[in-house]
Every structure is written in structure tokens, then in C-alpha cells.
Length: 281
Image (tube, rainbow, N blue to C red):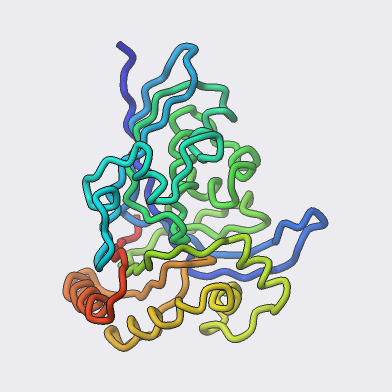
């Protein structure tokens, strides 16, 4: 029986993002600081000799608030309907499948999702990067062909990322903890970049994320969650990449209480959110 290989696909947090230009093919050039956090998805990979790629997705995203279904409850199986509830494609559009095609391997993959889709936390990219690590492929040029964040997710840690994501310059690691709050609605990265092209940077938090203004234009509901988090934590949160996750720095000691306080405020407001405490690794 083929051995089952296990890979962690840790969340990625974009702590700062600047748009520096745009290529002729439409891809945006960026400069950003990214860090790996200590929570994420898990993959069980069993290589197959010649059979088609098989992918099973198990939903363990922890949503708080009304509207939770069996498919989206922690521990619920999401092989079909559950994966659709997660908005995770099961076919050729899934980045795990694309990564396997890229490296010319066939496998049966069980993917346990804990990073909410559409969160801006690099869930799909981290999953693809896990497949590339398993296959022994580290070429950033190949990785970025899957998605802009895959090259960083292969390397992990803390880095400055430039170009369209293919330039990854490792930095000294630091020890930081973040409260990451993701609403139940996602934000389309493509629409956010389109809005950026139309309206520009606008007003963004301390100039740290050029896409924040565009993301708020695409999805105005983000502002309500931002303001709620600020009222509870006393600090205006920053947007992770193109959204939809807001994050605030905190100490490891204060994180559990902050998490409970934000969760209580969200529930009292009738919202639905996934809250993760992530420490840099």
C-alpha cells in the first residue's frame, strides 16, 4: 500500500502591501511583507501510479454565528455539498489539482480546510505549496504560475515579496501574534484589483495596504466588521491583502480574551465570523 504523506499548509498573512506598477499583460507588480502563521490546512497525500487525481475536502472552518449548517460545522465532511458551501472547487480549478498537474504527479489527496476561503490568508496557495514541497519542486517561477502567493508559501517564514510574487527575499523571523477575523462573505481578488485600477489607493491605513480602499468599495460590509473590531480591541485593524480578513496585533497572553470579546460582539451584532489567533513561525 502506498505511504500517506502529511503536509501542513499554514496560513499566510500579508502585513503590508504596495502596488508599484502594472505589466503589459495586466498583472500588478507589488512589494509586500508576508509572514507564515501557525494555523492552517492539512493534506494527506497518497501517490497513485496512473489513476486520475482524487480530491476530498473536509470542512473544519470554525464559524461563529447564525446560519451555520452541518456542512460548515467544525468536523463536518465536505466532499461535495460541503465543499460548495466552503466555495472550494473540487475539479481542475482547485489549486491542489493544478499543482499536481504542474509537477506531473497523480495522487489521492484528503484536504482538511481550516483557513476560510476568500479570507486573504493564502489558503489555496498554501495548499498548492504543500503539494510542491511534497514533490520536491521549489522553483518560484513555476510556483507563481499557479497563484501569486504560492512562491512565498513554499518558502514560508517572513519575507519581502516583490514582482508578481516570484521574488521572495527572506527576512529575520520575528515573534508576533495576531487576531485574524474573517467574515462569512469572501471578497473577489480580481474585483478588488479592478477597483484599484479604477479608483486608486484612496485612504488606506497608515499607507500599509494599497488595496484596502478598493476592497471596501467592492464589499462595503467590511467596514462594519472593521469598526466592531476596533471598538472591542481599541485598535483599528488592518486588512490582509485584498481581504476579507481584518487583523490586529496582540500579545499571546491577551489573545484568548480578545478572541472571546470580539466573538461576543459579533454574535450580539448578528454577524458570522471565523476568528483565528495566529503566531508567526
